[in-house]
Structure formats: C-alpha cells, structure tokens
Length: 349
Image 1 (cartoon, one colour):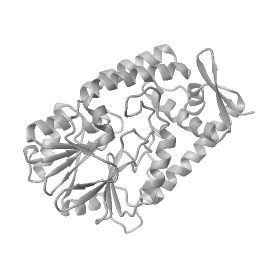
Image 2 (image 1 turned 90 degrees about the vertical axis):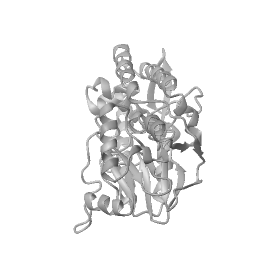
Image 3 (image 1 turned 90 degrees about the horizontal axis):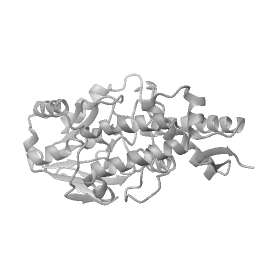
Image 4 (image 1 turned 135 degrees about the vertical axis):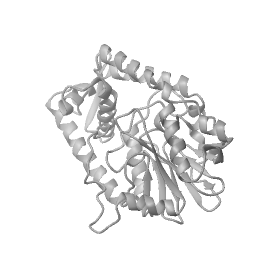
C-alpha cells in the first residue's frame, strides 16, 4: 500500500466521457479482453488480458488456486477461446497474484512464456527467492523498529501465501525497448521498476495504449515495495526513487488508454501521475516534520502517520516510510544512524 484507501477522484472521466465499462467494451471489440480473476488479497481481483492475434496472448494469469483457474477458464470461454488455444503468456512482474497460474496455463496449452530478461532467474526460482526475500524483510523490520513478534508473525503470514504462486519458466526473454510481435499488433517492452524490481509496461504505440500491470493503478497508488535486487545480490532496492524515475518516463508516453493490473482503465495517465507526485510531495514533508520533532526509526514514523499499524500492514508501511527517507537522505535533509543495531533517522546538521 502507498495510500491503501481508494481515491475515487483519481480516474473520474470528464462529464460525458466514456465509462470504464464502455472503454473495456471498445477494447474487446478491438480484440483485447479484460479478464478479472479473484485473488486472496485486499487489492481485490487482478485484471488479466487476452489479446486476439497470432499468437493468442494472455497477459498475466492470476494467482494459483482452483477458484482463480476456474474463473480464468470461464472468462476465456466467454471470448470464444479456451486455455488450450493460448500460444503466448506474458508476465508483467514477479508478484504472485499475477504469475501464479502462468505455469499451469503454459503446461496445458503448450504456450511460450515471455517476461523481462532481467527477471528470468527470479521467476524461475520463485519459491526459494520468495523465502529469502521474506527473511530479508524480517531483518529490515527488526532494524527499523518493528517488534520481533510482529516481524516473525508477518513472515509466517506471508509464507502462507506462497502456495498462491509458482515458478515461471520463461522461454522468450524480452529486452527493455525490444518489440513483442503479436501478429496484428506490436508491443514495445518497457522496464519500469518501482512497485517491484521487474515491473514491465507493454506499449502498443500504434493504438496509443499500454498494458501496465501494477505500475500505475487508477484507484490506489502502487506501493513501491522494498525488495532484493533482481539479480539476487545482497542489499535492497531504493524502490521509491526507482519508481519516481519510472513514472517520469511513463508520463512522457503518448497514450489514450492504460490497462492496469487492478481496477479501472486509466484514461489520463499524465493527470494521474501528477496526482501521485503531489501526494508523495505532501507525504515527504509530513515525514520530514515528524523527524524534525525528534529522531526515530522508520516504524515509529509509520505509527506517527497511521497509528497502531496492523501486522499485515507492517512491511507495506515500512516500505512507504523508507522510500521517503531514501529521498530525504538523497536531498541531504536527513541522515540515518545506527544505534545498537537500530536505524534512526534525524535531521541533518
């Protein structure tokens, strides 16, 4: 979560403009079908996209569960196709609500699997890498003031979700700025790290539309989650700094329509990105003000903003705060010091 509450004003169409349902119906008429599949997460259903062409292509597949698979089959059937007809499955990023069923779909259909080349090893090592990243998250939480009880408890909760994911064996690695040919359309591959290190946007330049995964969502801001780098090296991503750079590039794109991984289609990505930047600037000053009051670790900053943080939100809020402290450190406004193994942020002197 960045701001976990929905902001219904973010993507409200102009008076007289098309509704989300009308936009998706028009996309379906042009061979792009939005298939909403259930997930176990608070964000709700994930949008997968079936693209008619040569090959028949599925972008993302939902989490691995019988219910999700059943509904995915049903939605595909409503378009006049079946899972067995799919020739290519594309992953937008590494999160389990998007990749969980990719292996199942590929095995049933014989489809190729495409994803960003930098993410190939991470996707293939899903289980092991996810557990390593959970261990990293525990250490990050402890170092930033989260209690051991909460940190270990959240690791157990997160581990319980791993069955919703699966390894993805990529057969068509995609380089940044390469073209993915789907017969009647071509998608430009754009690496846009931030929400995850592997976030990828697929841009149909001819039709002025893009498939965005969770890079930009209409109803909530995409939390730039702190993660291990894609190559598995020690350390962590500076996720919010990465995300801001990615959004800046996406803002330059010539688009009429952005189809996201959750929620409604985005009709004005520039206005939405500007709102996201404005909200971030306000949050940045709020966090600086909290640190100005007295030095404190990131979890204490989160509690000053959100109150008693629920266990399931501890890592999300921590990622939010640390993302902003990364920026404040880069600006020279605060420093991070180690106090007996605890990271404490204070105003730069």
